[in-house]
Length: 217
Image 1 (cartoon, rainbow, N blue to C red):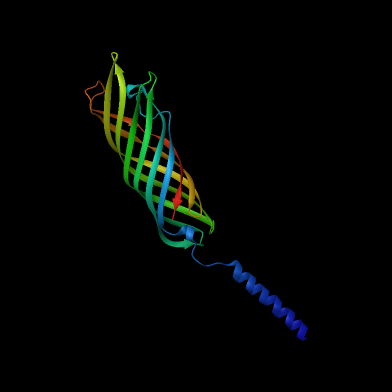
Image 2 (tube, one colour):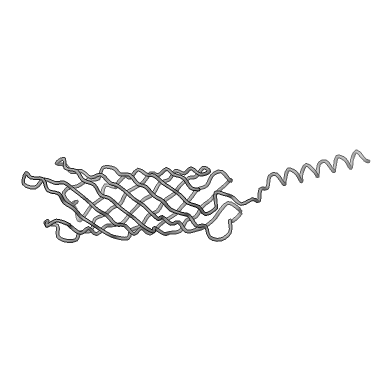
């Protein structure tokens, strides 16, 4: 009789210990608000700087680089300690795009973005990894420089622009490390700094894809 009670007690104790160790109710750190830093490779789309069948100065975009700083603010409780919604804020986003033309001239397009805001949803199946989906509204300032040849002589062209565009992205996080991809889409209204045939204001597409590496703390 005592042996039977002992066995039953051991079975119940093993079940309680096993169930307690399997359930970890501590907050999932992958779903906490925090600061992030990202470095990226920019791949401009084929219609980058496209305007009604032509690009300014017959330009084409080669490649680019991107640097971002921001914060993710999660709002509300963790759903099942695995899912959470929030606000993604990009405080600084600086991009460089190299330009070229079929006649060998070169240039660059610089983008400076401030206070990008949008929703984010994060899913963390365990406390080591997480997946993010997000979108942001992107106020963007651009400065474009291009050295071109006109009638056999070199001429510097400059353009400035400002617009509000969109961005969607996804990332995978393993602890503090992340890898992700973003698609930046929209147009930029450029104001010519030169007396050229293109007039004072032109709107060009600035669609590009970014491959990102970074950290989320």
